[in-house]
Amino acid sequence: MRWVELTPEHILASLFFVPHYNPSYPGKIFPVLVPGWTLNYEMFFYLVFAICLFLPARLRLAGLVGTLGALVAAGWIAAVSSPVAVTYTNPLLLEFLAGVLIGYCWRRGLCPRGAAAWACLAAGLAALVHAAWPASTRIPSGCCAGGRHRR
Image (cartoon, rainbow, N blue to C red; front, top):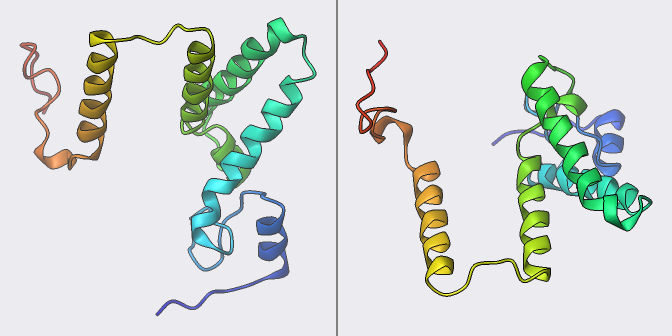
């Protein structure tokens, strides 16, 4: 059984959704209740979304895409170590962006229908299975395309 180390800083950061290293799990960015790490991302997304509502309507989507995209790109370019920077430059933010873009397409009737919809569903399920499959059993990258194996 693991003991939880509670400090005033840890509790306050957790209550205010500020990403921080958990004293009970060295090197891990977790609030007091570990599953609450997802709330840090959600609250940040809602903050950025709310700020974008101050933009003219025609610029809101571009503002959200640009902000989240720039943050993720900055995370790829820069070596960040602070828990706030690590969290808010994480590619996981792109999942929120995907949800926004799906909603945008849905509201404008741009989503595929019929066979195209089923093909998209199948491709999505295949991607999910591939992502969840243990890496040790995957086909090496480039194997089917005639690529060379790196050693």
